[in-house]
Image (tube, rainbow, N blue to C red):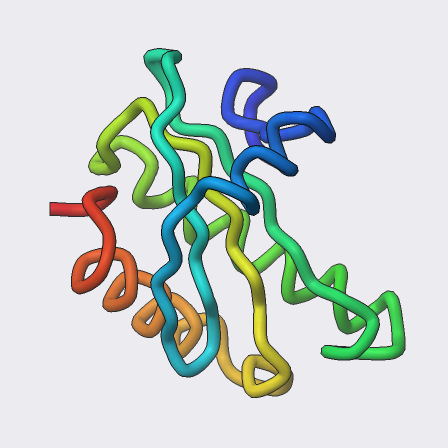
Length: 114
């Protein structure tokens, strides 16, 4: 679980992110990001029922992605709201494979990781 300050929880913030934010796409994950006026980066991990019908599978993927983000949080540029949209291809992948793809997408296509 993210710390309280790193959670993107309010519906109005999430709607603004999806309306105004920029996107970056990878094989396993898509990223929406938008600058906020706070000194911290806030994250939401989104996995729909179209990705996996079973909540057990969705929750496992969500936990894996949260741990990856916590691992790289110190290196990330603060001041962004970020939504991580997990794709169906991520099901059954090892945590290391998801981490490599997520980090590559963040480095290549977003200003979040140097």
